[in-house]
Length: 383
Length: 233
Image (cartoon, rainbow over all chains, first blue to last red; front, side, top):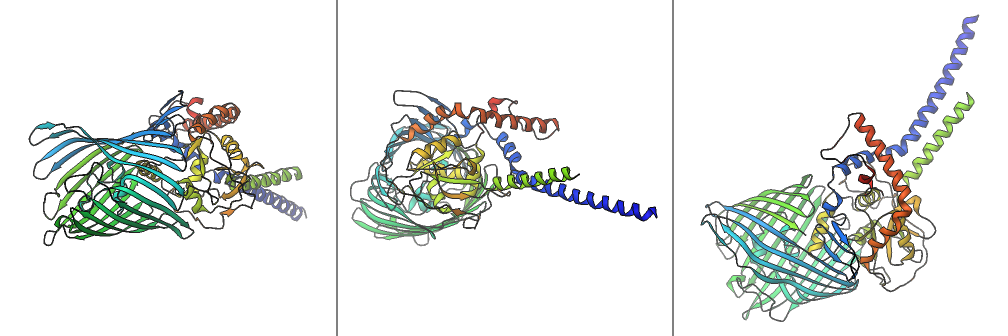
């Protein structure tokens, strides 16, 4: 008789324990919800501990002090802000080491560029890029060094921002053709060499006026540039000769998530009385750590120098810790029967936001005046 | 026994409540006089300085938290969904074009105070810091664990715009160069106890890890409150 009673008692105890165990499990689950939401915190903290000091990455000022103009502070890679004047002074520089397949090579401190920004009001800014060129070159084959410092006003303009859809820019500015030429400087690109078509097919700068803006929609953003050059270009290049005048435009459509973008450009330019017409199309695609960029440029005109077409496709893979794998295929046809194909492949490493090291090797179907095969390396800093 | 059950049930409810609070994530805030509902792509454009003006033509003054703060990292993950480093690349390229990143303030309290007093400003805060002095223009969900570069569901139901409020127009007055400096000085005192608690918690966790023989990065600094000063949200 006792056995069934004990069994019932045990069963009740078991039921109570089970219910309590269930409550405990539920409580642990409930408590684990906030814990799991913060589950990444330890790894984030560990990541923070691995990060270099904030002053070294430019996240915080490397130094700052009070002055009569207000606080003056310098951030690595972001320049020096001069108090409350709206003035910011910074720049960038690149040291290059090149070794061609024919044995020629050089070490070169090509230029130091200073970026001067004055933004006294959110609707107006003045901007200038001043380059100190040809500072130092050492020819490894001839064992001789050269230095012929000179300054160039690469860009200088004032910009009036009326609304997002319309800004007026007057001065010397980058020619808005394709992707590369919008930001062509060494520290901001992924290879130590530039695509031939960008260097040879058109003038990199315009001296004149531009109206530009962005129209934002839920489906994406439409950007446009309309510009013209009517005056003699400031500090223009002589080889190839810069255009005397021109008029052009660009349209670009960006996906709202930043996954893809397409654009088209047109430029009519007059050089020594000859007119040339440039048409271009470009696209960018980002998929996770992979970024693809492509440009196609076609120039037709009366002058033989301007009768060219070319294209490139570049892929950049963000591997880990700022380490990128880069490959670019180019095709360039300066005149009929004189075409060349090139392949650049290499690596780029950005250990700090203001420091980029690059090494890429270029092979081509043949060598020309503007195409060399071999290794190009560079160390770029932004200050 | 019943008391024990009650304690367990209370723990369960508290846990769920805490979970709900943590799941509220971040609130994007503007001055209460600005009736705005912002979508995620608008936030992205504003904080990338691609959209510079409010619909009424006022300049937008986006305010960031310090780069190392957890709030900033959560915001960037929710809005940009980008791989670490890609934003740095973006700002490098913008630097070449003469565009600098948004101004930063030293603490959530500084952001709250500044946005509450500046009609052109926009900021973001942990949802629990929002009060009646601010208008919530959008809510960002707490980020899910996973690879930092995974695309976020930018148009998903978790992203909800806030109710409407009023609109006002003001002229440009405050020089951007003054923001960081002033706010840092003002808020150091008021935030000191919060910072201390945050540091103590981190130091405790780190001690525990080291004691267990866990992660100790190469070149890490010795445990000190000074090492912690840059990391509060």
